[in-house]
Length: 204
Image 1 (spheres, rainbow, N blue to C red):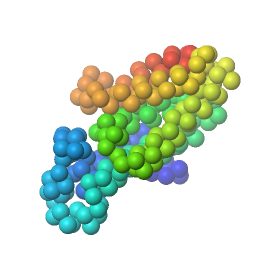
Image 2 (cartoon, one colour):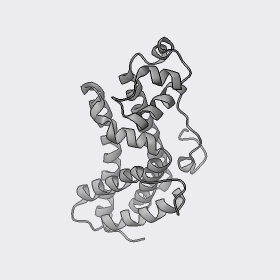
Image 3 (cartoon, one colour):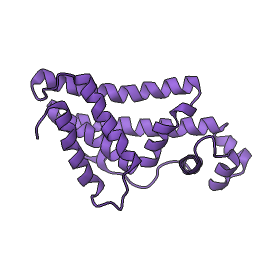
């Protein structure tokens, strides 16, 4: 996906775009946790020998870093495109970025789950890099909420806290959303976007 892609492309999710080693690591980490999964098992899931896996990723830590980087790069790109397409209105930008967050945490729920639960397993430098990307996503929403308060679109007295509450709402959906639930991902995103608006004191 790129900024020149078809309008609304940030809403579209197809099958996994992860290379085989990362897809195998994701499945193993979701099932067994980072520390419970072995490199040998990940290699077997990917159809590779252990040396073959190490040719692509030199360690299990590198696999975890690769997964987290891929997830954050995808989320940030989608959020940037969503905000750019929404125009200048803080309300429209807020709805677009929140919808992007919600859809990502439903359609890419396994990657989102690993990003939330296995940050503790990252080595110090890798954790710092990941937190930097995560904070960039948060600052995007912080800025939108601040702009909305300045414009009168939102009336929260605590814009930063409200912004973080909205992010928590979006991230949490990855823990329980199921594709076979009563609402589709777009329908559920619409419901939760309305709830998010109420957190910042905006109306729809």
